[in-house]
Image (tube, rainbow, N blue to C red; front, top):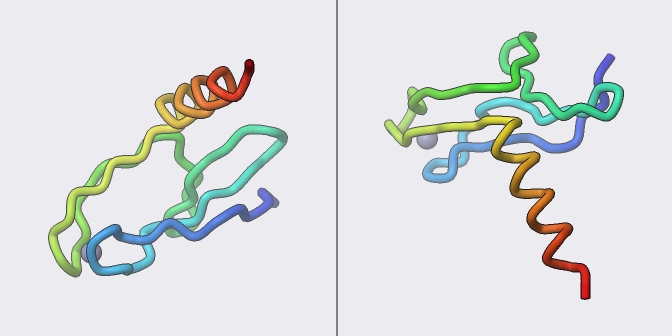
Length: 70
Ligand SMILES: [Zn+2]
């Protein structure tokens, strides 16, 4: 089973969107029992757009790590 890292919530109303998990060093978002690397949609509660992509997240982390180097 993937290891749970964090609960992803709607930025507007706080409703749970999915759970960020780590499986064998790869991060994925689990929504209703489905592991996904890309998720896009709208919160059914408040209409807030939601977009999650493991590709862009990995890129952001890479740039963040580079930024920490002297
Ligand atoms: Zn919402």
